[in-house]
Length: 239
Image (cartoon, rainbow, N blue to C red; front, side, top):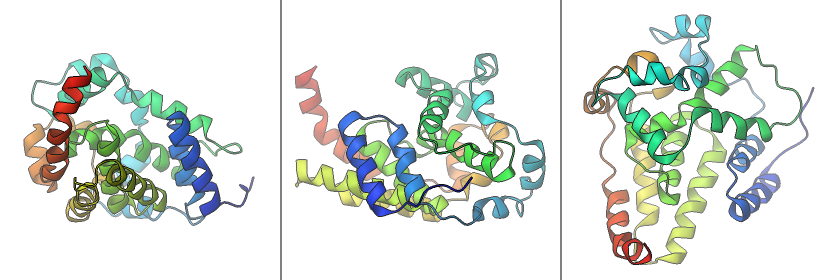
C-alpha cells in the first residue's frame, strides 16, 4: 500500500501537535513526513560491515532484547548494559514505549518481515542507547542534542528539523545560553564518531561504558552540561 504524499507541511503540523501534547508518536510523524521513499541506504551500508551480514540474517529484535530484565541485570556495573538499565529505570522509559509510539504514528500496514522494516525498528530501538553513549539526558535540550547526533549518523531530515526547533525554542527562552552551539556540537560529534547503526548492541552492552565511548569516538557533551548548570538554580528553586 502506498503511503499518502507527505512533506514539510505535514512535518510542521506534527511539530505543533508535539509541542501541544508531548506525545512521542509525533516525533515519528515528523520523521516519516520528511523521509525519502528510497530504500534505506543504512541497510545497504550495514551489510558492508564485518558483522552486518550476520546481524541482518539473524534479525534480532532489539526491542525484545532490551525488554529482557534478566538479561539486563546480567551486566556488571560500569558497562554500557548497566548504564542503559539504570537510564531506563531512572527515567521510567523502555524500548517498548518507543515501539508503541511508533506504532501509533503508523500509516497503513507496515511490511513487518521486510529487512528494511527490521532495520527501521533497529534504529528506533537504539535511541535510548545513544542517550547513554553520548551523555545527553531526556530533558528537552538533551533530546534535541541526541536527534542532532542521530541526524549526523542517519541522515534523517526529520531529526534535523526537530533539533533546530529545540535550539530555536531554547534560544527564545534564554537568549544568553548557547543552545544552537550545543545542538551543533552534538551534530559534529555524530559526524566524527564511528557509525553506530552498524554496532552489535548485544556485544556492546558488555563493554565498559568509557571504553566504548573512546572506541566509538564520542566526546563529552560539554556545552550541554554548561547549559544544565545554568538552569540548576532555577530547577532547585522550583523543587
